[in-house]
Image 1 (tube, rainbow, N blue to C red):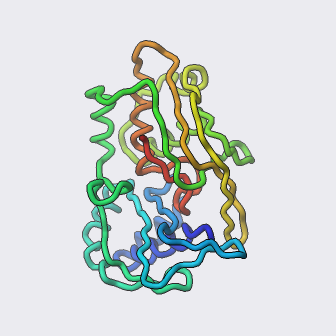
Image 2: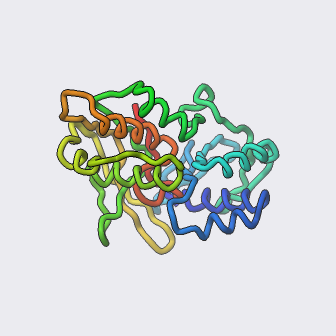
Length: 255
């Protein structure tokens, strides 16, 4: 199917169960913001007549996993070497792991940091703070708003959902003050080039937006809120944007 994030989600949990089955089951059952994201499969996909994709034998494909907790990261780092050269069944295909990238020099969607490093850069040292921020959104993105799905890059739900994930997973409290009010009044969409995409799962269909979107701070002077905003914009590289990031949605990076 066009949406393979659920396959990678299952693969990820199976790998974790091989390391620590109790931890994997606990992670799966936790209803709070989950400390990981997955992507769908990327590569040489041939669009088929029935709305599915065909994979080509002996071709290279890739997917992405992110960890947002120290415990999970250490668990993965200790075991990833044993995953290389192993064969896994993804959907109905046997696929062999031939390489693992963890550094941006090896792949543009790879990279490592920590909550503390991100916080220190933007909040303590006040480095890299910009008035305009642009996102490249690679996989469909949407937000839960009341009982509806929002498929527009509205600043407040977009950044607030990222802030909630930071609060749950970072262990670093933010003095946010009136940050939400600042989002409502001072943060605007200044440019976008977006399309909607639908992903079909077995029982559900989800629509989200992909493409590029630019946000601008209307304040001329730097404020503490702009620093928080820049920090969250950096964080989305690992946390993803919006809902269903553990199923491949919301894969985003700042450009």
